[in-house]
Amino acid sequence: MFIRTDVSQGGEVEQLIERTVAEFGRLDYALNNAASLGAPRSTGDFTEAEFDSEVNLNLKSVWLCMKYEIAQMLQQEPRGGAIVNTSSVNGLGGAASAALYAMSKAGILALTKSAAQEYAARHIRVNSLVAGGFDTELLRSAVRERVGSDPAKKAEIFSKYASRIPLGRIGNPEEAAEAAFWLCSDAASYVTGHSMIVDGGLTA
Image (cartoon, rainbow, N blue to C red; front, side, top):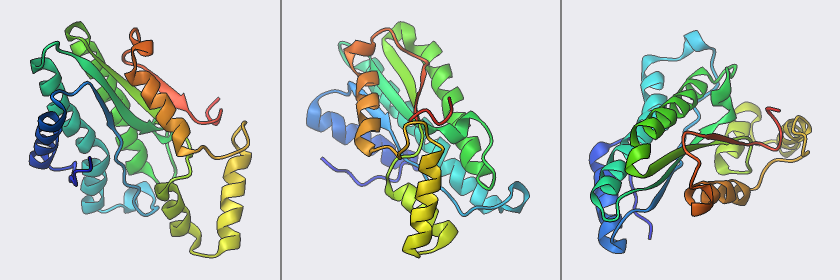
Protein backbone atom coordinates (compact mmCIF):
# COMPACT_ATOMS: atom_id res chain seq x y z
CA MET A 1 0.00 0.00 0.00
CA PHE A 2 1.46 3.34 -1.06
CA ILE A 3 0.56 6.50 0.89
CA ARG A 4 2.00 9.72 -0.46
CA THR A 5 3.52 11.61 2.48
CA ASP A 6 5.74 14.61 3.05
CA VAL A 7 7.77 13.16 5.92
CA SER A 8 9.02 16.60 6.95
CA GLN A 9 5.45 17.49 8.01
CA GLY A 10 4.29 16.08 11.34
CA GLY A 11 0.59 16.01 10.49
CA GLU A 12 1.19 13.99 7.34
CA VAL A 13 3.43 11.51 9.16
CA GLU A 14 0.81 11.07 11.88
CA GLN A 15 -1.81 10.29 9.22
CA LEU A 16 0.58 7.84 7.55
CA ILE A 17 0.93 5.83 10.77
CA GLU A 18 -2.82 6.01 11.48
CA ARG A 19 -3.70 4.71 8.01
CA THR A 20 -1.10 1.96 8.26
CA VAL A 21 -2.48 0.75 11.58
CA ALA A 22 -6.05 1.00 10.29
CA GLU A 23 -5.08 -1.27 7.38
CA PHE A 24 -2.85 -3.79 9.17
CA GLY A 25 -3.88 -3.59 12.83
CA ARG A 26 -0.50 -2.71 14.33
CA LEU A 27 3.02 -1.53 13.52
CA ASP A 28 5.82 -4.04 14.08
CA TYR A 29 8.61 -2.70 11.85
CA ALA A 30 9.57 0.60 10.27
CA LEU A 31 12.34 1.63 7.88
CA ASN A 32 12.83 5.38 7.74
CA ASN A 33 14.53 5.91 4.40
CA ALA A 34 14.13 9.41 2.98
CA ALA A 35 16.95 11.65 1.79
CA SER A 36 17.74 14.73 -0.22
CA LEU A 37 21.16 15.69 -1.51
CA GLY A 38 21.42 19.38 -2.31
CA ALA A 39 23.67 21.06 -4.83
CA PRO A 40 27.41 20.76 -4.03
CA ARG A 41 28.75 23.81 -2.23
CA SER A 42 31.44 24.73 0.26
CA THR A 43 30.16 24.99 3.83
CA GLY A 44 30.09 28.79 3.94
CA ASP A 45 28.28 29.08 0.63
CA PHE A 46 25.04 27.34 1.58
CA THR A 47 22.07 29.59 2.15
CA GLU A 48 19.99 29.48 5.31
CA ALA A 49 17.09 28.15 3.24
CA GLU A 50 19.27 25.29 1.94
CA PHE A 51 20.32 24.47 5.50
CA ASP A 52 16.70 24.31 6.67
CA SER A 53 15.67 22.23 3.67
CA GLU A 54 18.33 19.55 4.12
CA VAL A 55 17.80 19.33 7.87
CA ASN A 56 14.03 19.02 7.40
CA LEU A 57 14.23 16.39 4.67
CA ASN A 58 17.14 14.33 6.01
CA LEU A 59 16.95 14.59 9.81
CA LYS A 60 13.69 16.10 11.03
CA SER A 61 11.85 13.61 8.81
CA VAL A 62 13.46 10.67 10.62
CA TRP A 63 12.65 12.13 14.03
CA LEU A 64 9.03 12.76 13.04
CA CYS A 65 8.63 9.20 11.76
CA MET A 66 10.17 7.81 14.93
CA LYS A 67 7.95 10.02 17.08
CA TYR A 68 4.74 8.55 15.70
CA GLU A 69 6.09 5.03 15.18
CA ILE A 70 7.24 4.84 18.80
CA ALA A 71 3.92 6.16 20.09
CA GLN A 72 2.09 3.40 18.21
CA MET A 73 4.53 0.69 19.28
CA LEU A 74 4.11 1.67 22.93
CA GLN A 75 0.31 1.58 22.90
CA GLN A 76 -0.28 -1.66 20.99
CA GLU A 77 -0.49 -5.09 22.61
CA PRO A 78 1.86 -6.81 22.73
CA ARG A 79 3.85 -3.61 22.68
CA GLY A 80 7.17 -3.10 20.95
CA GLY A 81 8.71 -3.24 17.52
CA ALA A 82 11.85 -2.53 15.53
CA ILE A 83 12.89 0.67 13.76
CA VAL A 84 15.70 1.09 11.24
CA ASN A 85 16.88 4.55 10.22
CA THR A 86 18.88 4.94 7.03
CA SER A 87 22.03 6.99 7.45
CA SER A 88 25.06 7.21 5.17
CA VAL A 89 28.80 6.63 5.24
CA ASN A 90 28.97 10.42 4.78
CA GLY A 91 27.58 10.65 8.31
CA LEU A 92 30.65 8.90 9.71
CA GLY A 93 32.86 11.89 8.88
CA GLY A 94 32.99 14.98 6.76
CA ALA A 95 32.02 15.21 3.11
CA ALA A 96 33.53 18.01 1.06
CA SER A 97 30.87 19.97 -0.84
CA ALA A 98 28.13 18.11 1.06
CA ALA A 99 28.50 19.34 4.63
CA LEU A 100 24.77 19.66 5.27
CA TYR A 101 24.09 16.14 4.02
CA ALA A 102 26.91 14.72 6.14
CA MET A 103 25.74 16.69 9.18
CA SER A 104 22.16 15.47 8.92
CA LYS A 105 23.22 11.87 8.35
CA ALA A 106 25.52 12.05 11.39
CA GLY A 107 22.55 13.38 13.36
CA ILE A 108 20.57 10.27 12.45
CA LEU A 109 23.22 8.09 14.09
CA ALA A 110 23.05 10.03 17.37
CA LEU A 111 19.25 10.13 17.26
CA THR A 112 19.15 6.37 16.73
CA LYS A 113 21.52 5.57 19.59
CA SER A 114 19.66 7.88 21.97
CA ALA A 115 16.29 6.32 21.17
CA ALA A 116 17.75 2.82 21.45
CA GLN A 117 18.82 3.56 25.02
CA GLU A 118 15.48 5.12 25.93
CA TYR A 119 13.15 2.45 24.59
CA ALA A 120 15.04 -0.84 24.93
CA ALA A 121 13.30 -1.70 28.19
CA ARG A 122 9.96 -1.11 26.47
CA HIS A 123 10.70 -3.64 23.74
CA ILE A 124 11.53 -1.26 20.91
CA ARG A 125 14.81 -1.80 19.08
CA VAL A 126 16.28 1.07 17.07
CA ASN A 127 19.21 0.66 14.67
CA SER A 128 20.83 2.49 11.77
CA LEU A 129 21.63 1.26 8.30
CA VAL A 130 24.76 3.16 7.27
CA ALA A 131 24.60 2.98 3.51
CA GLY A 132 27.46 3.31 1.09
CA GLY A 133 26.97 3.81 -2.64
CA PHE A 134 23.91 2.07 -4.05
CA ASP A 135 22.57 2.27 -7.58
CA THR A 136 19.62 4.53 -6.82
CA GLU A 137 18.10 7.59 -8.43
CA LEU A 138 19.61 9.73 -5.65
CA LEU A 139 23.13 8.63 -6.62
CA ARG A 140 22.43 9.04 -10.33
CA SER A 141 21.03 12.54 -9.83
CA ALA A 142 24.08 13.49 -7.76
CA VAL A 143 26.33 12.37 -10.61
CA ARG A 144 24.24 14.31 -13.14
CA GLU A 145 24.54 17.39 -10.94
CA ARG A 146 28.33 17.17 -11.16
CA VAL A 147 28.98 16.14 -14.77
CA GLY A 148 25.75 16.71 -16.67
CA SER A 149 24.14 14.16 -18.96
CA ASP A 150 27.25 13.10 -20.90
CA PRO A 151 27.21 9.26 -20.80
CA ALA A 152 31.00 8.96 -20.98
CA LYS A 153 31.53 11.35 -18.08
CA LYS A 154 28.87 9.62 -16.00
CA ALA A 155 30.43 6.22 -16.68
CA GLU A 156 33.83 7.59 -15.67
CA ILE A 157 32.47 8.86 -12.35
CA PHE A 158 30.79 5.52 -11.57
CA SER A 159 33.96 3.64 -12.53
CA LYS A 160 36.14 5.81 -10.29
CA TYR A 161 33.76 5.39 -7.38
CA ALA A 162 33.59 1.63 -7.82
CA SER A 163 37.39 1.44 -7.91
CA ARG A 164 37.49 2.82 -4.34
CA ILE A 165 35.24 0.02 -3.06
CA PRO A 166 37.06 -3.21 -2.07
CA LEU A 167 34.25 -5.33 -3.53
CA GLY A 168 34.79 -3.46 -6.80
CA ARG A 169 31.23 -2.37 -7.52
CA ILE A 170 28.35 -0.17 -6.47
CA GLY A 171 25.70 -1.92 -4.40
CA ASN A 172 22.29 -3.11 -5.53
CA PRO A 173 19.33 -1.64 -3.60
CA GLU A 174 18.20 -5.17 -2.74
CA GLU A 175 21.41 -5.65 -0.74
CA ALA A 176 20.56 -2.67 1.45
CA ALA A 177 17.02 -4.00 1.84
CA GLU A 178 18.32 -7.38 3.03
CA ALA A 179 20.38 -5.67 5.76
CA ALA A 180 17.39 -3.61 6.89
CA PHE A 181 15.19 -6.71 6.85
CA TRP A 182 17.66 -8.53 9.11
CA LEU A 183 17.78 -5.63 11.57
CA CYS A 184 13.98 -5.73 11.79
CA SER A 185 13.81 -9.50 12.18
CA ASP A 186 13.90 -11.66 15.31
CA ALA A 187 17.34 -12.83 14.16
CA ALA A 188 18.55 -9.42 15.39
CA SER A 189 16.66 -9.60 18.69
CA TYR A 190 19.80 -8.70 20.72
CA VAL A 191 20.83 -5.83 18.43
CA THR A 192 19.88 -2.25 19.26
CA GLY A 193 21.69 1.07 19.02
CA HIS A 194 23.84 -0.41 16.27
CA SER A 195 25.14 1.38 13.17
CA MET A 196 25.39 -1.32 10.51
CA ILE A 197 27.73 -0.24 7.73
CA VAL A 198 26.78 -1.71 4.34
CA ASP A 199 29.25 -0.22 1.87
CA GLY A 200 31.20 -2.98 0.13
CA GLY A 201 34.18 -2.26 2.38
CA LEU A 202 34.49 1.43 1.41
CA THR A 203 35.06 2.69 4.96
CA ALA A 204 37.19 -0.27 6.02
